[in-house]
Image (tube, rainbow over all chains, first blue to last red; front, side, top):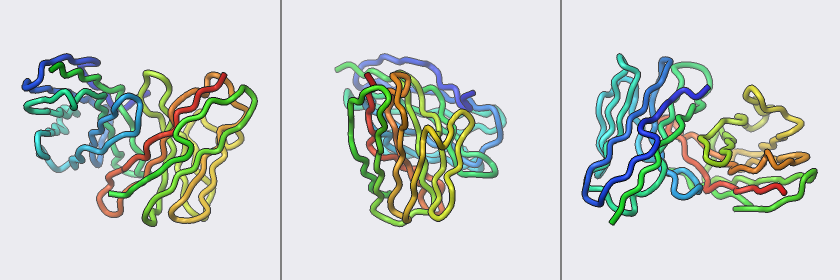
Length: 112
Length: 114
C-alpha cells in the first residue's frame, strides 16, 4: 500500500492565491521529498526535508514536517498558471534501501 | 542535480512484443531505480539497479517480465517483456544524489500497448 496520502486529491484556485497540499505517512522516515509532474511527464524534484527538520523554504515553496503527526505540507504562495501540475510527496525509509514510497498525489489547477 | 535522459520518450507496441528502455545519466551514480506509473496513478518502484550485481525487485515484479541491465555507473536498461495492454504506463528511471538522498527522475517513457 502507498506510504503517503496526499490531500486534497484535487485543488482548484485562482492565480495569486496560495495553495496548500498535505501529505500523511505511516512509518518512520529519514526524509520526505516533494515532486511536481506536468501532464504525465517526468518528475521535477522540488524540495527534500529531513526528519530532524521542521520547515524549509525554496522560493515560493514552503514545506513543513511534523514527525509526531507523520504529516507534511507543501505551500505554494502567489500561485501562477504555470504551477498547474500534479504534486507528489515521497518518503525515504529510516533504514534499508534508499527507495521512495510515493503518495497518490494532488492535482493542482491554477486558473488565470 | 543529475541530468537524466531516457529513450524512447514514447512508443506504441503490439501485444506480445518486448520494449527496452534506456536510461543515461550525465554523472556516475551508485543506485538507479526504475518506477512505473500507471494511468492516473502514482509511482510504484519496480526495482533497484546497482552496477555489478543483480537488480533487486519489489514485490509483484519479476526479472522475467522486467529484466534490467546495469553495465556501468551511468547507464541502465529496463525491458518490458511479452507486453499486454496492462503494461501501458509511464516508466521512469531515477538516480540518487550522493550524500543528500535526493532522487532525480528522467523524463519518462510513455508506453502504450495495443
